[in-house]
Length: 168
Image (tube, rainbow, N blue to C red; front, side, top):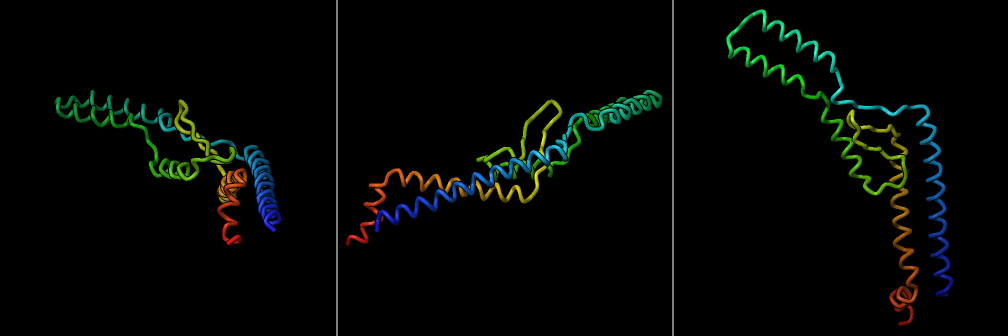
């Protein structure tokens, strides 16, 4: 009876493992197809509207030279010009990406957001909501199987604890 129960538990975990591998392969196939369709989008913080900013700064400089204002006014204009060099980006976008990445610290495969800092800024891959949900389920399944696999390796210890109730 005990051996039958142990064999049933092993069979259940074997099925869970096979399902996890199958889903993993399916996600990778979907990911390759989406990579062909959707090109990787680049969010370029520091290169965004660079030419427009430079043109505006040159216009402001020309206006300042033509007006010949006081030193105080020139200093104020220079401060305003310096602010235009700051990168324009939406902080909410970054927060959402980082929050998402924090939820998936343990990456199962490459279908998650790839967050790499490049010369131009950050690069993010587009993935669908279903892929996020499936990969999270896979993460839970794999950890579940791993934990019980460790217990199964120590069968003697497991039997002593679990079957003590039946022996009494």
